[in-house]
Image (cartoon, rainbow, N blue to C red; front, side, top):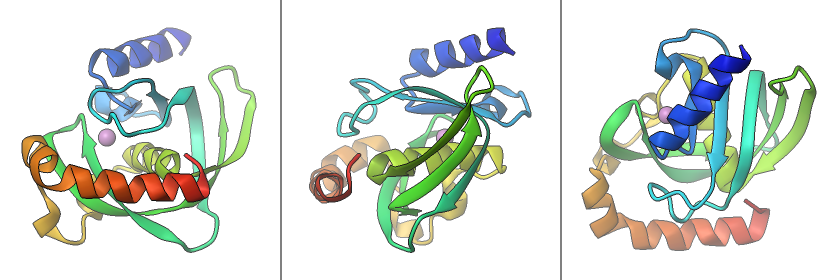
Length: 161
Ligand code: NI
């Protein structure tokens, strides 16, 4: 298990992912890695230290949602708008079996929801309600990035990362 998690982290970093779930590397177990550190795919995301979630369960805190523009290593060259909860409570184990029990907010909460969705057999495509928001990464950069980044920076300033 420890060797598998090391490989998962290495693969996530090699692919510039903000996270990677075990099922994305064909291992059907409930484990995912999350890390954001000067990510070239998502330069606007605030940093998240390396986090391993084992058997995570997310529970929304409040009903407030925000529109998150997401991409995914398992869905090459496509992004789309997804509704995510602004705050979620996380219960999980870390890679050593220690309890993780915390509430995360904003873009960080969006990343957690995206990764835990993988463990539920869902990708962001399953959550896009308006297909007109689908865009390639180039189209996103050209037409949508500026407005989106302004909007999420306001969210992060209000609720934290
Ligand atoms: Ni993904």
